[in-house]
Length: 70
Image (cartoon, rainbow, N blue to C red):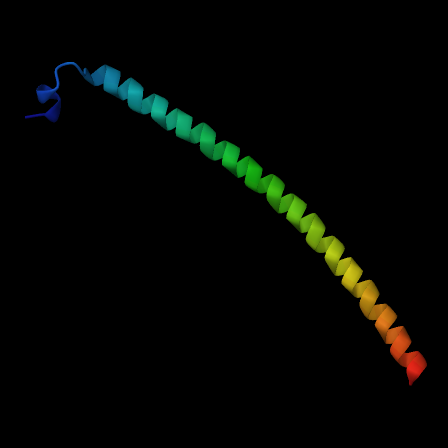
């Protein structure tokens, strides 16, 4: 016997609608989180690229200073 029989105030269609709405809400939340993650990854990649360029410039300057000392 179905557990719904113990709760006559809940109809199957209403429960399906409620579950469907919950799934849609979670789906929207997931898409929002994915978009935020994408923005964060893009910003982080940009900062990482900038740091790598700065490090490369520092290495070149150190190499030039080292050659002047040699």
